Image 1 (cartoon, rainbow, N blue to C red):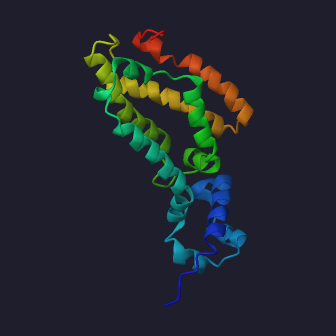
Image 2: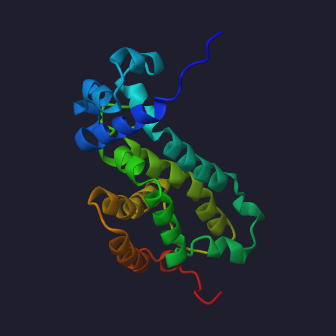
Length: 207
């Protein structure tokens, strides 16, 4: 039995990524993708059932990486943390924010596609959906601080979602606006001053 030829797959995905970045999913042309990849439309359809499946394949690795980080965070049990560890989980310092920026910058084009080029695909609401997932993963940490009396701050799940959505907008926008790495580093310092969770929850900063 002949083995499937996967040698052209990287060419197709590179071409697709370029076309989707340039025109977005809805305006992207499969014909243009095939021409740039130097493959026939028949060869493309042997691999992908249509344009959305091709888009999803182009961003699949980045989506998997994001979900892996989310799964790791979701697997943490706040009830097993000491008071100090629970409070320090809210310490959003430059190292933490820069970790996110580096992680996303390493996946720059795919992340931009998810933010700006996904309209018409299953990832059309990626910005909202990601913030909602992070809220769900984070809510348990807040509830545990309340349970232990470490904070008197009263936040509903919706209020926490609004705050975390605002935080993620500050992460999204530099990618949407094409910030350089140097601009991102400067922007990171501003974010850390803006989102001071220790002040929000009334935690001691010298703990």
